[in-house]
Image 1: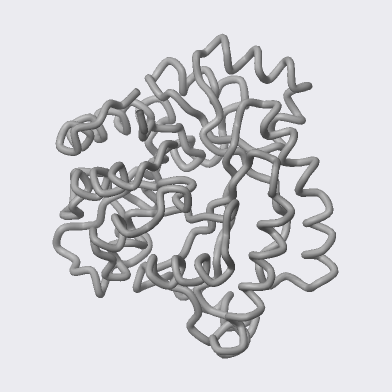
Image 2 (image 1 turned 90 degrees about the horizontal axis):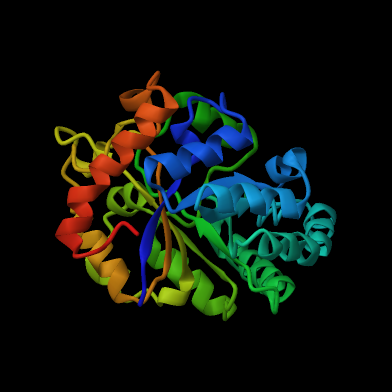
Length: 297
């Protein structure tokens, strides 16, 4: 039976103040079946056996493990090719640690018009897909559909010449994966970016479950309409007006079986201690799961 299980996300930890061991322990004690971490954290803690023992003691499994693909879709060719050369070994380590998902992104803006950037992205997704073939690991590319960003974020993009709109919605991401014929490259579906880009529940239902690799869940300020949502207008699930119960139910209908991470960026949870944040996350998700007819575990 397909499940959507919560995983403890790095944004809940107050800027990385916890050690790897403390983070895993917190996930277990707060009732999260999963915990997110990176290969670099696992390496710093110890070998595969030591990491697996820590996870087992705390009755958690990896939600997502970062660091499998160390280049972006539009990185220089030499960097992208070098990153692909490491994918198989990195993915094998993810599987040895008990995981099967890693994360990535698809750019909101590119340095060339969409008509020129699109075939490059398709070709690179095909190559990434081939590199992951047979490893048992999928990567979820996250699109950015929130309408408003900080001036410094915009300046960062424009400073790199990234001024041409690229992929900013679930529909476009699905189209990109369809053209690439993807098997192992999927989507990190964030409720904030879905809602902010005027995503619909039908679009979610029409997305193949095999293409949904990972979920991020959050809500938006109820007094801000979706066309004016700032990336930091996020609030805890259930504290805004996103249809999150229906959203999870629609995702469940696709057959998705994986993890959902709480990602409430910005001032809403700033300064909240990791243990309190973790507990608040489970408390916020509980009624939404009930609306969706799902179990937290």
